[in-house]
Image (tube, rainbow, N blue to C red):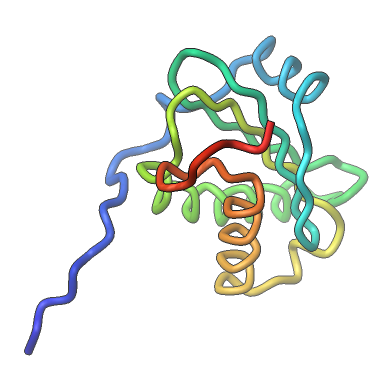
Length: 129
């Protein structure tokens, strides 16, 4: 059996990439937005390392269990792709109504589309800012 070439992915928690309070607010206020299906990505370029945050409003999902489930799924998808994201971006993923109904593979497809649309992957020429 042939061994498949595996994609390099983070095998550690994403804690070191977490956005903090003021950074989070800055991205929400000044960031450029991209929307695919029920997922919005807001981003700004900074000179430092890449950082990420997730936002799911109580208006969108009433129960904390549902909000946490969606965040866990999005974090897992990001963990697989974090090494492919260029340095110097700060990103907030915002979940909208309907995202909780998606299957995991559908979430992955939406996530891939939004990463490509925003041009923040390392192999893409220039970010959309």
